Each structure stands twice: as C-alpha cells, then as structure tokens.
Length: 396
Ligand code: FDA
Image (cartoon, rainbow, N blue to C red; front, side, top):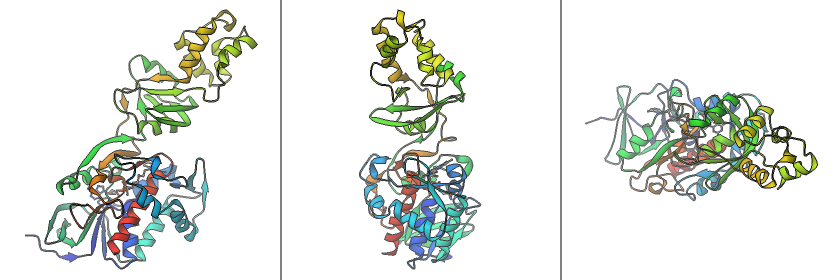
C-alpha cells in the first residue's frame, strides 16, 4: 500500500498553458496545488508558439471555432473566461502586444513573457511546481488520488489531467492523458494530428515542384471553408488555409481549393472577349504566381489563344480553378502537428468545471480534452479558459 508522504489539495499533471492557469487560479484561492511536469521547463509549447511571439488569444474565440464531438461543450468555459480576461492579465503585467490579423493577438516581444507571467501568477498562490517529475503509479482510493513521483507518494482529493496531446513529441508531448483517462473509465475520441501540413502523392506529386509558391485561396473540406494563404511544399501543401482545413480532413477525402477567390463569374470568357490573343497561362499569371499559373494551365490542358477556344471549355476551366480537387495521401503527422483533434471525450466531463462525471475529483483540461481550436490563438484561449474553469471549481 502506498503511504502518502506529501498531501496537497490538488495535483495538476502538466505545466503547459492549461495546467499553469489552473494551478494559478486555484492556488490564489488558497488551494494547495502540486504542479508536476516531466519536462525540465514549464510551458515549452508557449515558448515556441507564434514564431516565439505567442499568439496568446483570439478576440473572436467562441465555441463555433472549435472542433469537438460535442460542439456545445466549450461554450461554458469560453463564455466565462474570455479573450478579454486573458488580455487584461497581459496588460496588468505590462506585456506589449498587437493584433496581427483575423483577431490574432501576439506579444510584441517574446513568448517568454507569457510563461513568466503565468509562473508569477502561480507564485502568488500556494503552488508547488516540480519539473523533471517522472510520474509513477497513479491510484484512487479512500477519496484520494495517489501519485508516485520521485520515490515519494503525493496525495490529494483532486487530480487534474493537463498533459496535453501527442503533437510534437520532441517537446515532451505524450498520449499520457488518454491512457490515464481510460484507466479511470473515461472515453477517448480517436486522436488525429491537426493544424498539420497535408502530403500529396500519385500524380499530384508534380505539384511538389511548386515548393515555396504561395497564394491566397479558399480551402474547403466538407462544410468548412478558410480563406488564407496556401503554400506548396516539397511534400505537399501547407500554409494557414491548409493547416486550418487539415483539422477537418479525413483520410480518403478530397479537399477543394479555390485558386481565384476574387474572380468574377465568367471571368475567363470575359478575358477572351477583351484579349482574344491572350492565353490561359497569361490570364492566370495576372492573378497568381507565374509558376502556379503555368502548372494549373498545363494540368487543365488549355493552351493556345483564348480567342480560339470555346466558351464551354473556358467555363469548365474556370469551374475547376474555383474548386481544384486535391486528394491528400496523408499528413505530416504528430511530429509536425500544432495540435491534436480528438482526446478525452467531453460527454464524460462537466462543461462548467471540467470534472469527470463518474470520478469526483478528477478533472481534464486543455488540449487533452476533445476540444480543438482553429489556428490563430484559439487553442491557447481554450487552455486558459478550461484551466480557469477547473481552477475555480477546485477552490469552491
Ligand atoms: P501542453 O502540451 O502545452 O502542456 C502539457 C504539459 O504536460 C507539457 O508541459 C508536457 O511536458 C507535460 N507532460 C506531457 N506528458 C507528461 C507526462 N507523462 N508526465 C508529466 N508531464 C507530462 N496555440 C495558440 O493558441 N497559439 C499559437 O500561437 C500556437 N502556436 C503553436 C505552435 C506550435 C509549434 C505548436 C506545437 C502548438 C501551437 N499552439 C498554438 C497550440 C498550443 O501550443 C496548445 O494548444 C497548448 O499548448 C495546449 O496547452 P496544454 O496545457 O493543454 O498542453
């Protein structure tokens, strides 16, 4: 039998964005929190996020910008802890910030400021942070959670799973949260890499020769549509529009790319009337990077002067350019995925407190849970909001 050598009110596993927020909120309300992480530094994903400037929230954060088997689950936490609340904290610490685009807020300086802020928030409360903490056996008995760590056993009435998802394993990311949740009888929605580049194979391999070429497009999969940049890579497709759509894409499905989102209907037939001696390639090159224009014209097999081509052929080309079908053969996987779609099933959790319905005292927050945001600060906002909700509940 494990004998507790240290007793806390709550043990939070994982000192990423969600765990730090949860520990700080609970700790500042007098909850004695042990915050454990196997990494040698807290918040490593915060540090590398947003190119080192951390896109820490998005002013448009709302549940409809998140993927989850239950699209309503995130409403409560996101509604109670908003982008503005996190921004107030950022301002209170004098951290300079700016809005980049599409409501995305970044630090002017460094993501280190966000980690330092969260650590200071923890230090203001009763939080004991332990890094390099390799976790051993975890048990639940007599209303207490027992966690073996470093030859000792920690015990607490509450245990918070905040160990994230398996994206970017080289930063210490693991599927630990899912294993632990399953051991406590919680279900896990199949995890998949998300916000991840897509790979092309077969005859689409020829698009790899466009590596480095980017264009503003509308990318679509199912009902989802994103208007942002797409980038051809030596493996396939990337760029914000593709990362966004990758979260919705499933193996075997196609994605559609509108290469000309601003083109007026019948633009190609119009071009034929106005400049009959021009070619499709030249017409496209007025709107797209030249190499892309050339490849698309070749793939469409539409050569020669527009004046010699039938309107029907041009309309068909226009239609294909507006919904170019790609059949990705995969993604670049968890090694390159910014986040994980899927995770601990929300139907087993309270949307208000993040507590497991069937295991009182057990909580799950952040990326470990089946709530995944769009690109652009949405995932951190979920980490803060779910961490805040659980932190509040721990103190009540
Ligand atoms: P997170 O993964 O941050 O933290 C989990 C912690 O648990 C880690 O510290 C880990 O070491 C620890 N852990 C894991 N397994 C463990 C174990 N077995 N034992 C002990 N500890 C364990 N989002 C956004 O909104 N804006 C952005 O700019 C970016 N940019 C970005 C860039 C890149 C390259 C990536 C990979 C991701 C982003 N994201 C992002 C996504 C964002 O980083 C992510 O959604 C949050 O960090 C999730 O926070 P969590 O606290 O849930 O998990």
